[in-house]
Image 1 (tube, rainbow, N blue to C red):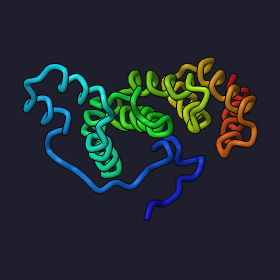
Image 2 (image 1 turned 30 degrees about the vertical axis):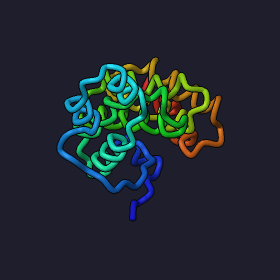
Image 3 (image 1 turned 180 degrees about the horizontal axis):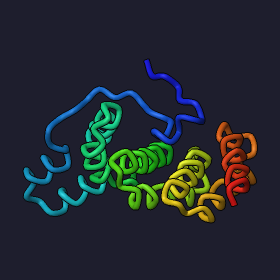
Image 4 (image 1 turned 60 degrees about the vertical axis):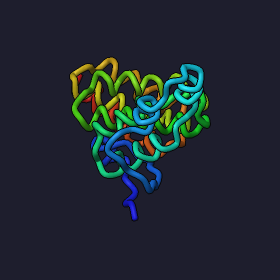
Length: 173
């Protein structure tokens, strides 16, 4: 159903996705909030992880509607989500911002992925961050990301690409 990306296609998008089955025009949290009068109940519902917004965000992401995906994911309270789900959301938000050309916000979310020691996407985030820094002409920052990847994730599928980028930078110094 989905074609697996190679390390050389990472500049186009981050890898990783999940199937979903629901879409709607308004996020569920907006619908719920507009229909509630009880502040306690409203607070309880908005603090809970909203699976409908999550599914709408995943669907939008997979349909490459990145603005809608960001809107849906931003509505979610990640502190109440499953750890893996929250990790995926942060990762997808980074990718969505990057795909929309918002490199600054993409970097913010890539940093959040990298700072999460339990994330399964750290190596992906490091290669992506390195490539984005390189694109901006920030050679030292790109090399820092590539070196962290090579040193901390030597068996990653992206380690070879990172090593090539390091050698490439050395050739052009």
